[in-house]
Length: 273
Image 1 (cartoon, rainbow, N blue to C red):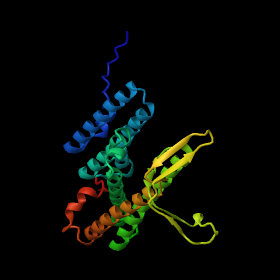
Image 2: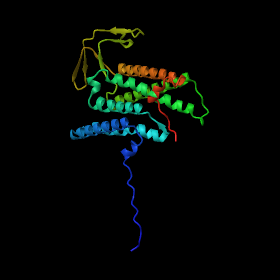
Image 3: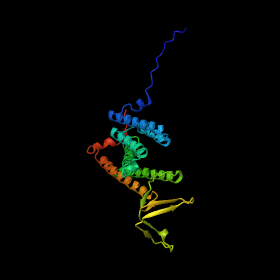
Image 4: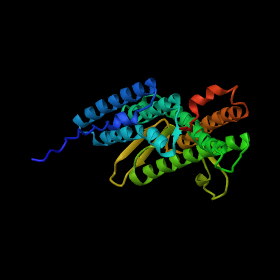
């Protein structure tokens, strides 16, 4: 028998432990609590065989890891406040909004999230350019106004791409991500019986009746069903508001970083060894 020494293998830390390594206590508590709630929700949905919602829960768990993975990949540091806001945003959008139907229960839920999305995306866009702007290895120096403009454009681009995604899901997969709504006024040149480029207005619409080829009759009370245009434009408008608000904050922060030092709680920065 050989006299080989037994080497005790060190146990690798779990994925969650490595993910939360170096995080502030408030971030760790928020992450663990929300993760537990998502798992409980996923188990409940699986018991009711709501597999689409189970997939949403799994997607949410994956999305929770994105901020930390971006930190490690890009070597940047997300402030604790910003990271907590991102976790809460994901939970509010996917679990509360989609699965618990907060979008239907609270009329302003979608508006609130799109406004916050515009703010957060502007923060991310601003911080990425600000990091490049302040690094000595990059020969780029941009003015505060241009930094704010880039942040605004980045946020609006993300908002537009999301609306493209919603339209694609509704058009080709028959979802209803662009929430339809009943309105009682319609104005269109298509209703002009003389084929003139003149708007015809129909107001005070009481009901709309839809007939299918299977002789099924569907009645829409108090107006007609508008297919998502209002929702899309509302989402883009509140995204615009969120982007403008942060762009102004970012502009002030770059001009006087000491005076507006509190904004560092929501602006990522480069990790230093």
